[in-house]
Length: 348
Image (cartoon, rainbow, N blue to C red; front, top):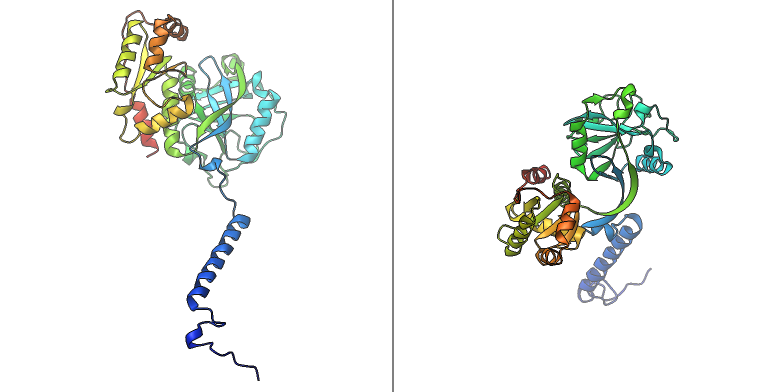
């Protein structure tokens, strides 16, 4: 007969003189430890960088006579790798360009009208809205290669899988210079260029790899788009301002006095709660959070004090003249850009 343990019930709890509450406490600690071990070894945790609002990303800058869009490859790892290899090989530097324009729908570029063959094989479909970059192909799902399209509208339904078609791979996004893409679409003859008119294609003057801070959340992406779109407008001088700011008013007077034509974005006229996000994003991009924040050709020259100092030193006029923003009439154009609200609304 097995011996009996005395005191196992009543006074002594679960046994060995250890109270029940102690067993429960250490049991809970043990279960929590097991869960932590499972998370560390079986779950891919987020990196610290993934938790930051902005990250440095590698992008590709296509310079055209209309401006310089930057494409930010993401997702679809096979297609992104394929695209990067094409750029590295110099494929788009010669006999390539934008040859299709459908305003409000899409622009398309590559080497098609030059009958230019790819140095690489085709890439399969991987799994769009406005600004997305999509790999173009013919009816064969495996025919995607060198041609790409930039969406000018939300074409998700068209690009999605349908019937036997696997759809089209969205592998990137226009990070900045989107108004340039729209301008190209509006300037070119609508539709595909005939191969005999290949000299009318919008060529890529240069293609460069750049590293740029990019937002990681949808709301900051909307703000980033609005800031870049404002900087890419036909005005080379852009001021981010607030209507009640005395320093902004003084900077406007200074720019007016020298005859500068300026695009002013009044942050306090934007939807509630978004002004601080604009200032956070401007801080990440320019190192300056306060207003006024004045940009010449997309680069901040500072605020009111800096503008006054440049003016007093006789340097402001040459800087502004170099942007092409001087006008005959000494009138400053103040614009609250409704497109900023529209862009914000798209992201909810």
